[in-house]
View (tube, rainbow, N blue to C red):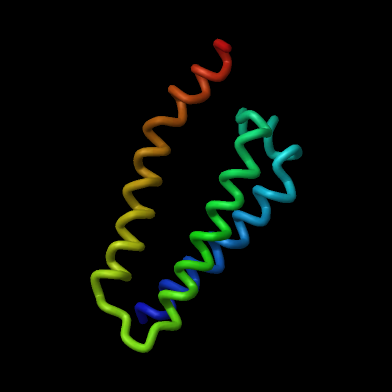
Length: 94
């Protein structure tokens, strides 16, 4: 099970990173973010997906590694949700 979770998370992260890299100009307006943000974020996401995939291929996967990956995403989504209105308002003012 941990292997599947890490593999799925890795693929999803990498695919979204490629979407950020290839569709940054198209996504900038609907998301309300500067298009200059998409390339660095996409690169980091592709690298993160590769890191998760390499963790999934290790001979022994410790339970804490999978728990950390899952909880990190859960926490970061919560923080992004809380911060999104402030970020959008800040970008509109500039």
